[in-house]
Length: 358
Image 1: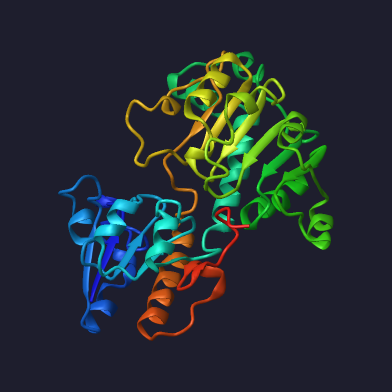
Image 2: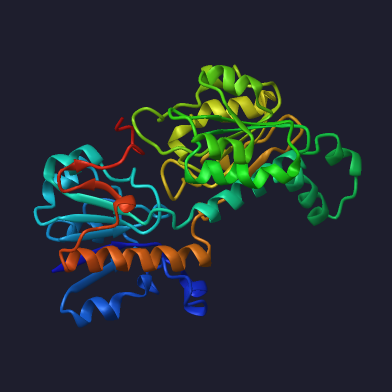
């Protein structure tokens, strides 16, 4: 059996740090285990174009493993060529790099390691909110330049206390973000989600649900995006919705880049409609060197908190999603039931509401 894994190259860092498990060098720590059972294990970062390792080997691979951080984009066209493919495993959370409808039609299972990076991403969200609200990046850049002009950075720095913060999506990550914001004594915590939180959960974080999205964003000083990417959320944060934001609000997106319209976000930041945009997700990944989100600024020369996609791939998260990937593989090879929370597409079709399947 051929198992194909598309991971990111860790370079010297991965050679020095074996806990970088999600890399081509350290291969999720499962090569020896796979080969002992007589299976072939192909690992590469090469994923673009018809001559890539990904496209050459997907035609006869039975198992595909990929990550949200360096995704192998499995289109309907590639699925039609992947005659032996039975199961796709996301080493992490988020399987939107796979054409899920095509997988359903072909009876290909799609699983991910549910919960493996929820704490990691939630912490990154809180950090990103603080970076923007406190105007940290321009302040640090000032120090690097050798300058010292407190007023230049303090004029756009605020406290998080007393602000209204809301999450689009109140699932595993969104809920944990609100949990972690409680000690900051925000004025109010809001959430927008197709399903209300259980009463005990909403009470625990003292969060209020707003059912209309435009009304929701108009009330928030900070909006954080924590929902999956699917047909219903692609381009959700567009120019029209951004016009309903409070002028000078901050927006954080660690969910998926395609949920926010690239040019609309850049224009809103440039005009000052947004004071800041922060996140680690791009459409596509790796992002082109000339991607406007790399360099966009607000009128005061700040407001950009963008980083490469790493919030969910801390060393702690990598240990969890590597172990989870192995567990899914073990169940598959033994023809044992999978843990229900990991199944996006099962043998009989969708088994989750996360991707717009209501």
